[in-house]
Length: 207
Image (spheres, helix red, strand yellow):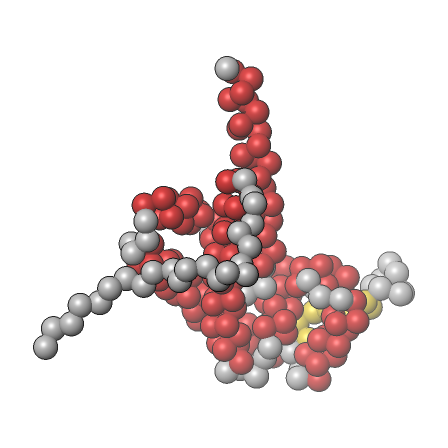
């Protein structure tokens, strides 16, 4: 027997709910932030599961991936690239050293500085798993885009427009697909507001 599926409607607001008094620009920015956060969480979950198959956390994979594509780096440089604390980077490099994937090297110009570099084992591992990991991230991004596009087809036209307005900010520049997603997306988000404000100012001046 055929059944009819009705689109779900938003429930009526609770008597104690308070509607935020926001202008359209601020409300759109907050909605965009929610969309981006959910997309990030979905992609990060799949990326984490992929590297876990090789006995790595996403932060550990981020380190060896950065060293593979950039070469040996000072620990402070690695820390800035994967967005962890100084104590955190020391702990992570220690773990990777224990696994035989990373080694510390002295700096010939500064005895206090230490470089992190991949061992032969670490280089071979990244060369083996990175192409598939990049494909996993690409598929996760495409799947999230498809889900949001399908959901947009069941929403009013003005909400679909807002969704389409946000689509272009989900692109992730290579390399470091697994670890730069949050920073890359947030950086592009931070540039949206100034651009809109500048455009509005130019329009007002032309009038």
